Length: 191
Image (cartoon, rainbow, N blue to C red; front, side, top):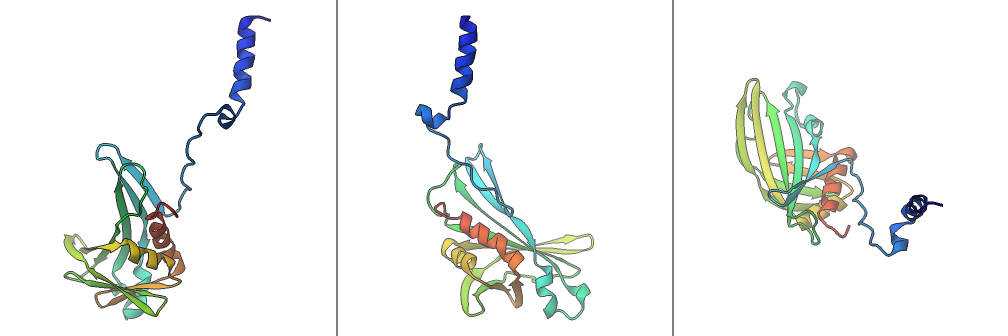
């Protein structure tokens, strides 16, 4: 046999042997894909941001409004960031943003936020930051709050949950609570 034929056979045999059998380290497994979270690494800033899928909460407020056309569009977004492309300690806090769009302003200023776990215990989460923008057909209001790691873990472990945003009660159904649970779980690298 020619030398080139022997080299090709040797190459084929060696490429079929797993790297672990050759004593080489295998790369760490990629994190499990998520339906509700998106991770993005910014090389320029050396920051990774984990963003939660936007949750539409408009239906959660339907019972408190008599005329269904008066229900504001309400969405919840969430994210957290950490330095580098990997983290090895829990993230300090997640930022949640409530966005409303309606014909008239709904909140008009900062709001206090409470979380109610399993319809029995309350979490005092603090006050939001407020920003409003006038749009062509209504007003957009943006309320942002930072939720500490411990509170997010309690929210993620709750069987039922609701926010009290100012005077409005926003009850989460199971499908709306799943993204929050996943965001809370992702804040801890050990989970």
